Image (tube, rainbow, N blue to C red):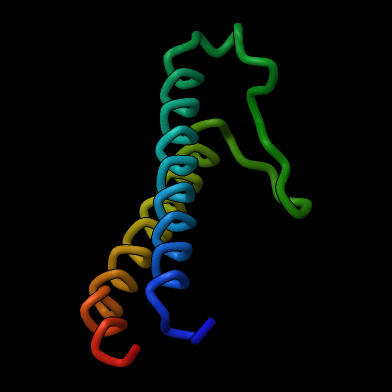
Length: 89
């Protein structure tokens, strides 16, 4: 298989779509957790790398990271559209 073949593009597209779907699911889970009263959450603070975060700081950080990943995926898709692969295949 050539590095820029139609098959490879289709596989990469499928992987990107699965990742986007997983990120959307994670956002839904965060929203569901956010809707719970604080006393019903298992944890109210989070420790990452020895640094403690409140729920709000943790949630905002994760949401920001997810949006950055999704933005990067969109940029990659725009920079390397299928038409480029068709021309060089």
